[in-house]
Image (cartoon, rainbow, N blue to C red; front, side, top):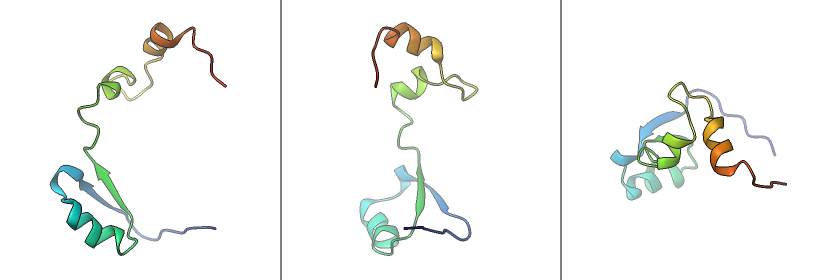
Length: 70
């Protein structure tokens, strides 16, 4: 299945959008929307990413350096 999105996708601050409005305006209509602001308070957003947007590899090395992954 291929989905082609034409035009711009609306961007909203999720903190300003009620669940009811989300359902009525986007979910029921199958309308894509980009929700922002949902992870602002997450500690991982501060720990895992440098201020310039790059991954904080030193953090991962320090905290997970001996972890095994598939």
